[in-house]
Image (cartoon, rainbow, N blue to C red):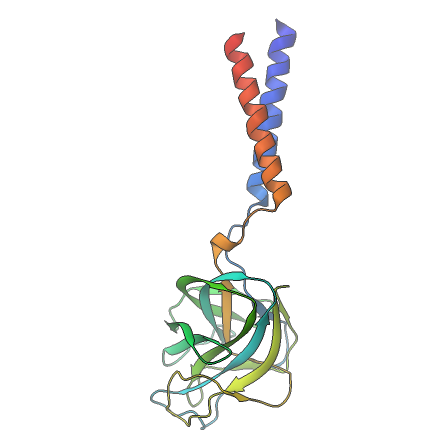
Length: 226
């Protein structure tokens, strides 16, 4: 009887350990599609964007396998005040607007490896199939600042292509950034976040979770029979 009780306790403990391990393995928050490293320069539009509606700058990227996005961000260097609220948009490579939002100095922040933070706002969860996309943000004269000439990383499913800007002039607002800018150093004002629901456990993690439930169920059943 004592041996059976001890064995049941071992089973319950093993199941609890498995389930606790799964809990730690599950992601807790959304992931940035791109992040910058420390260093580089922060620049403003410097008189070319207007002060009423702004002008759109951003970057083009390729998606190699489908991802779900759930937010758009804007760079805030050294957590400085934004100034005017900015509009951010996500387009297909052909110029179809898929999502947009307004980001302000009061928007929630997401930590960065660089010298600043990302201010983010949620959008309706959107599935991006493999293909080309463009992300853009309205910039005003002198604000907000963008990070350039810096190292950066992306998630494996996304490949950065080039910086872009709209062919419309200053104070044209949120418009498709259709001009490819020279160089490949990046123009990182806008950013994307994966949707939390897209961060699903690996198959092995799911299998381990199932094993924990089975062990726990057997332990409970034997305890009742005892």
